[in-house]
Image (tube, rainbow, N blue to C red):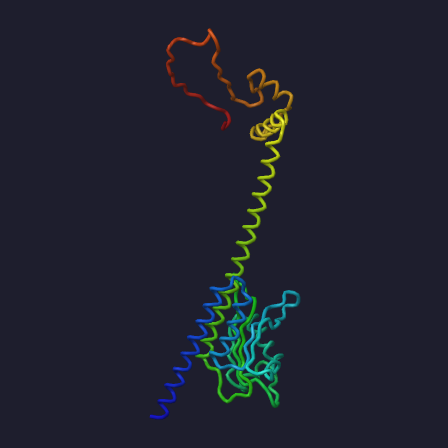
Amino acid sequence: MRGALKGLTGTMEHIERLETAFFKIGSAFNNHKEASPILEVITRESLHCLRGNRSTIFFMDPKNENVKAEFTHAISPLHQQVGIVEERQIAKKALKEKKPFLLEGPEDFSDFFKYEERENKITSLMSIPLFCKGKGIGVLSMVLINESYRFDEKSLRFLSTFANFSSTALEMAGLFEEAQKWNSCRITYEQYLDKILNQLQGLSEREQQRIDTHIVMIQAEGKVDETEFLASKTNQMVPWVRGAIILKEESGINRRKDERIEIPVNVEFDEEY
């Protein structure tokens, strides 16, 4: 009976730690757009939830493809540097192979490095890669130091949840940065457009006519002499555009007085316009 009560108490404590971690991480997502403060909370809360001794988020260094600690949280200052070289080695392997690693006890370390006898050492380790836009960019790692209990598959599943939170934070931060970049481009474009419109309003009639001429020439996709174009406008003709016809009513007493009759005519054009 006493053992069952103790087990129930341990389960309730674990649920409370889990609820606290999820609440604080959710609050961090609501309060921050950048990834850094969210990742700091995830590093700290995942450690408390899983009762680890040190948790670290490693990021890949693009210069030499090594990993370096970006965020770390330790229960005791004495645990800050214990086995950090070995932990970094496992993190690099997890990132390279894009799969998580669980080293439950000292017997599992022999496949990766020589497990030396020393006063302070890692006794259990978990390492899970982080992804952003489908690309592995970092690792969430957690270790136990000089502890009698171990991480297991259940612990690894819980840490995977925190790793997913980390990847989501990185994805959201990237989307927010892109949105800011496009918003900045839009503002710059509108400023240039307003500047051009203000300059156009101050142009003389002759300068505006020259601009109109160039616009029409570009739209016609033809290289036409400007003098010829201005002359054609004066003569009410546009000889430089094939198929163009100008229709103009006569003014004054010569205006047509008879009733107009619409006659449909089939017309074929050699070109689209």
